[in-house]
Length: 510
Image (cartoon, rainbow, N blue to C red; front, top):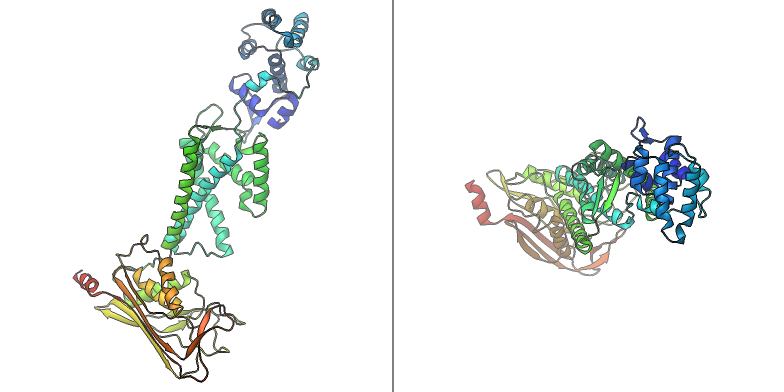
């Protein structure tokens, strides 16, 4: 039978039963899956122990009886004398002892239930001796939960690093399918790493910060197989395999059981220990680690935007960088149209070629005509020295034309980042791509001149505009330049991203 049945039949807690097993008073068999299989005889043994501990017989004396070092008839007279010397609250125990002695009962054969029924207190009431005879039970549900959150964040961060650094995936903007894959892979990493940590060190990073440690009931380290079994049950019974809604149900049930001191299924064959020392310092350490993980997540996300082609790149490699970065930032629209342009049939971004022109991507749907006429998407011009790209530029000029001009912010940002982030001197931590992207858009979206340098690359934008006004674009939340009726509109824009003279000279030396 399982331990839950034994608890009900013997009137003892799981912690009591584990304690007596550890003390050698109980030796249940194990079935094929490694779980203990208790018998009726084990239940009777526990009842005997319960009775004898209830009448204040020491654990050492019970061990001696169990090992036949002495007989119950020899032990009881001595114990009876001790009980009579105690206060009135031990009279009941004395009465039971007298009856046991009068009946000349043997330890291995007397009926404990008969004498348990004679006790005045309820059979459900736990005697003080049984409270002493127990493996310590750690509740602390919130400590355990936040330790698990930290560990889960670390495992998830490892998979995010693979996605960002090797596949250049935008981990902050994944599809629902990407999130499902993320949950599956995080669970796989959990099942691989956590059993290894528990079997080698008895703890995990999150548990260390909250003073938690896991061991076998003997106090020894868990084997890898035991640790894996524990982790698998935690994943299923504790987190519901990360299935939405079901996970919340499992987490709530685990919290409720843990707070009530009930046994959790993944702790059937192991013990959780809690070291309460240095609690304030550990709490500060946990908070600092969470901040560190948050920062690491940000920079791993940014690492995904760094292009694969780096160093002295060609125009073709630059075009590859541009197209990859356009996918990373999910600018899924023709860049001469306003943001979030909505029209039946959808829209898709154009692909940059190594000649600086634009072409359709395979399988996409494209806007051919719109209710409003927008400025054309400018062609990019490449500057090269000995086959190495040294600059990229584009320009536009419109005079007395009835067209609307959408922001060049995304086009300018992608043009600059595809070159800046490809430089060997580019520092991800000093200038994260998304911050550079936002810096360019803040000026370009309002058609303001700007210039700056980063990683040996200079970025310059110059606008001239008259006869236009800002107005919200149709089917969009962004603003565009619209010609003012009765005026002669004029618009000119020059944009260039290039290596400085010193940077070109250094590159030529190599």
